[in-house]
Length: 123
Image (cartoon, rainbow, N blue to C red; front, top):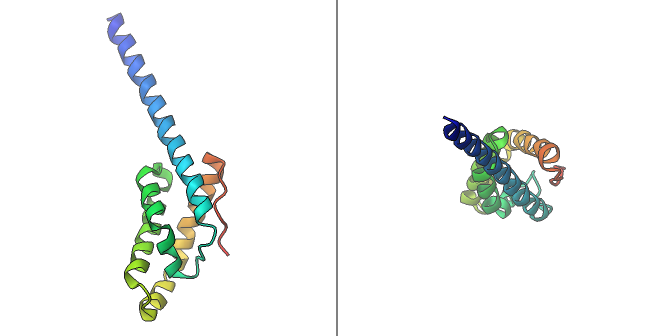
């Protein structure tokens, strides 16, 4: 019985370390994203294409608190990529920036609180 209890304790400790490592990995990736997203204008849907790959990576590794927010950013960036230089499509997308801005603000707040990372502010 003692072996079972010790094994269970070791598994629980390992799971805690894994979660910590995943959070740390997300924070490191987030810091890299913050550096590359400096020139992204949230009012220009075409600018979201610049961060699409990083946003996908962050969506995959994001903690549950911001996973849906990253999904909103990725979806918007993918639409922007698909629109390309089509002004009509980009104008339609610009109507969605409110929801994307809200998601981004949630991500920024979580980044500061949980990762001690400042992501670029939205203008």
